[in-house]
Image (cartoon, rainbow, N blue to C red; front, side, top):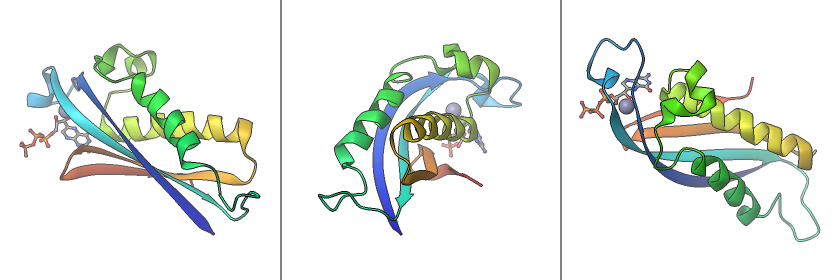
Length: 125
Ligand SMILES: Nc1nc2c(c(=O)[nH]1)N=C([C@H](O)[C@H](O)COP(=O)(O)OP(=O)(O)OP(=O)(O)O)CN2
Ligand SMILES: [Zn+2]
């Protein structure tokens, strides 16, 4: 089993609805995102899938949030923009993308760091 890992990054603002503390106020973070894809079968180049293709898709999703107010994104009007929901958001979008293109890989996990010392990892079950 191979695991392919790519990372990306975005800067954005958010606030947590109904949060009993300072995070209920608008503030910003520099989020880091790491995606793990798993698969067994390699292509004729000996790749699970080209890093560049996965990075481009991950960057496309990050661009939906980069330098924005996350709460205004349609997904986060319904989900509080916690690291948990951000990880789920990336996982859902990447899974949709993988399913339409690659039958031999799955999105095993997405990890979102809200700071260098705090992250959430979401895994498919
Ligand atoms: N499980 C989660 N807990 C918290 C989340 C989250 O997404 N999932 N988010 C927040 C807030 O976004 C907050 O901005 C970050 O909280 P906190 O680490 O307390 O704040 P700082 O970055 O300022 O850290 P300091 O150690 O106080 O400097 C809260 N919790
Ligand atoms: Zn925050």
